[in-house]
Image (cartoon, rainbow, N blue to C red):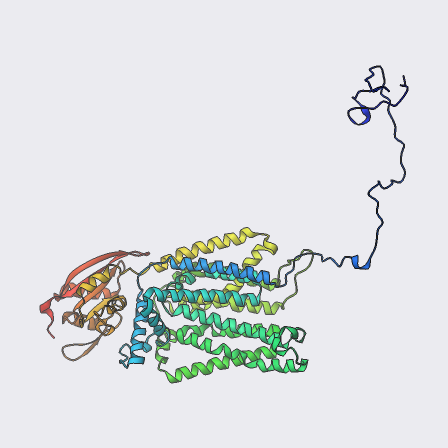
Length: 611
């Protein structure tokens, strides 16, 4: 092997000189030279490269503090609160849009309550006689919601009254979010508010001018006040958190305890609200036990058993006293019996009503049952990786809370199935869903898992709930026929002072009385008649209608003839055709969400009036 003399050749190219050219000592390429390989000696301990060495300086103030295992915290924070409120605002906006998309003319109950409110205003403030007798058959006090609705109607008409109902339902959803957040957390509260906001009863009542929206709001407000009261009493009693209570910052621990004991009367703040809910809608009394038990359970967890029973007894006593005063000073007992406690039985089959209940509230109820089971098994989700979820309240307490809230959804369906009447069931089912919604929120959060591990489950539930709520509310809102074309025809024929028989009669009274053409005293419905015949006999029911038509007592008749007419409608139509006292002046067809029909307008033949 030839070794080149002189300087060591330099390799050009890859590492080690392989494939490169070798240059001689004069710097020129020497093709005769042979590449000489250098073997680097093995190094021992590596030495720091120049420029990278430094002297480590250790100072006490340079030491790093303890680093947490995770940067996520389950504790409440202002940021989480504002994010929750923003999401709640979005839910309320969706609820408002879905309710306002429903359109129809006044339903008979809407027209009746608003017109009754005007009559009560005239009676209370202008001395007009109470000719309607509304207090004997209304399902709520005629001096509460009807008067409020009439005042709003005088400002903006039926649209304004329906907007008032929307405001009530939006406020109820907000209160549901608030007391669910106090019972559980923000995520559960948002899920509860969302599933309740898109249910068919919520969307329907949000654009429906009856007692129900206000009654639901008052029940939600009662529950919120009581849960909040428990928090206030707990904060005052907790000596460790005394710095968070501004009013008692400088007092001693024993003074704080005595102050906490003085808060036993705080539940009385909710008593007038609960009593007012019963006054607005008598059936609201069915849900007062749920509100009371909710107070006792919340207080038992925070304050102990003795204090819980004390607060529950105070609230119950306050409500009973107020309701007793109301019954003693009014004559509404007969209306309560006829519309609530001793309501007449219907003929709707139990399977049909059970299917309706399942369609209108089955999804939320199923989620509430799921939430109850999972909440009983485990108090919370393990949000922090590697750590167990907090213990939370006991198993019995969790089971009791879930059973009470979820079971409340069955009260209205069970009562109306017992009566076999489906009248207003699609509205009444919303009362129980208000209380079952918190457990439904728990069920949705457990389906999602910690940190939204399975969001597709919540998305599927939300889409299904939204679809059902939109379709069912639209169908229920289109059950009654629109009177858009009927009112102009009646306005051409109705004259002041004329007596009319109407089905419907509430909408003509409401719309035509605004024009001064008629009033409530001049109309007879198909539900009740007390007619004095030629011989001075008081005739009621079928005999009364037959005699009044044969005598030509009515100046005109409005008849709603649908695919399934009732017995009274069939009787009236038959008498109109055979008596010769009336002629058919017009017929207006209509289509509803459940079928078709037409309105018939009959006018009396001039020579037929003999009395």
